Image 1 (tube, one colour):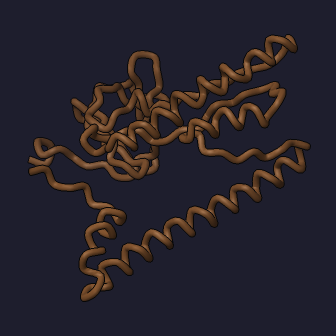
Image 2 (cartoon, one colour):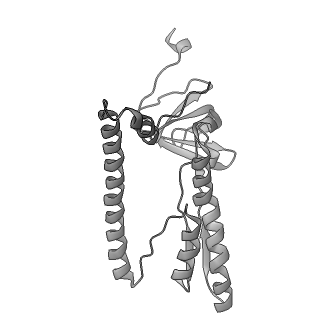
Image 3 (cartoon, rainbow, N blue to C red):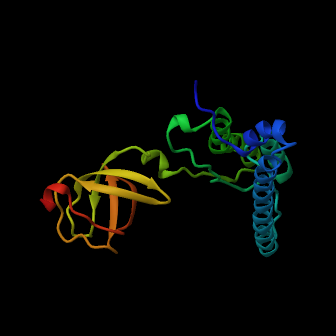
Length: 218
């Protein structure tokens, strides 16, 4: 029997049958949901205030919508009217192990990252062509080149360091681990490390800690 995915909503659903003699099973997850929704609303209002201030400086207009809601994408395009530049850079993280995603999560990632930019470009491009001017900028992410599993790369520590073969493993929270195939000299915390695949830069960061392998320690 598969283990059910834990969620506050699932806890509330099960707890309803125990509410007469175990009320806390309903109160605490309910309060957690309420607090989370309120926090997102506050954060959303702060972003809207910043956008409205930017709109006043640029004589623009703020349109709010959820790119995961299909009707909202079409509504945004209709309300925007004549658009000279479309910059599609909204994105949801879609990395991780496949079994960690439910179907709704997959649909949301695809709707925001793939469908929304294509639909907006399709709806706004005809007006640009008719006016004879306009730009569509579709921004992608390097996440597609740096999966959560081990990735073979060449890594470079300093500008005069010869790139060396290594294995890259992302750890989450913007951190990663790089294991060189051969020992490297003078690796020091605070130095930069850049990772390549062929001629493409797939990422980089500042070295937090350098450690020896078990063979080197021995």
